[in-house]
Length: 113
Image 1: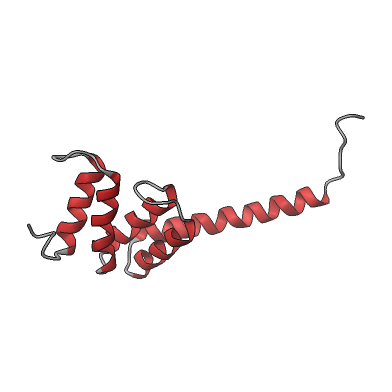
Image 2: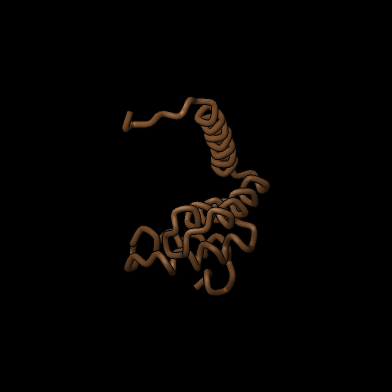
């Protein structure tokens, strides 16, 4: 099997198969393991997928900081989807900061009055 021999494309494809249940029994943990093997070898699509896996916590413990590391790696290797995710997250963070500023400026209300 090419995946077991270290072929990153085969590892990523096998991870996808475990994630979707295509031809094998669906197993999120095995999907994450195979995709991570490919990601660690520099497979950009696997890096982006692993970012999503960590972001949602499917087959691994949810960890948004680890997700960001993998999104950054994928973007650095030219994965456009990862770059879009990073930019969207930055926009959302900016919007949340702006909302927090507006909430801080708003007068306090007491629902009992």
